[in-house]
Image (cartoon, rainbow, N blue to C red; front, side, top):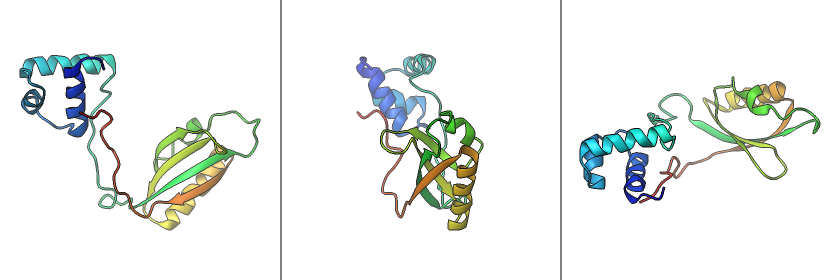
Amino acid sequence: MDDAVDHALLAAVSRDGRATLAQLSQAVGLSTSAVQSRLKRLEARGAITGYQAVLDPELVGAPLSAFIEITPLDPAQPDNAPELLEHLTAIEACHSIAGDAAYMLFVRVASPRALEQLVRDIRLAANVSTRTTVVLQTFYERRPVVNP
C-alpha cells in the first residue's frame, strides 16, 4: 500500500474488524462516506478478503493445538496433499514449507485422543508421514498483518 490513508485504514481494520465506520473515520481522519468508499475499493482490489469472528478455542471445545509436519511417503506421488486433507475440519491452516517436510498443518482438537485420530486420518488420506508438535501455550496469534 503506497497510500498512507489506505495503510492506516487497513491497520485499523486489521486490529478490529468490527470497528464502525465512525470509529474508522476518526482513526484515519476522513468522513465516514470516504472511509466506506475506500473500504469498498480495498475489498474490490482484494486487499480485504473478509471479516470473521475470533473464537476462544477452549470455550468452543478445541483446546488442544498442534503443528503437524507432513512428508509424502513416496516422493513420486502427486503433490496434492492440501486437496486430500481439505475435508478434515480440525486442520485450521495448511502451509507449503521449505525443508525436509512438504507441508506444515496447524490443527485444533478436543483431546489427545482426538489428535491421535486426526494424525491417523491425515496419514491415511494423504499417504504421508507425520511429525507432531503439541502447543503448550500461545502467547499471541492473529496479529494484524498491517501495522500503523
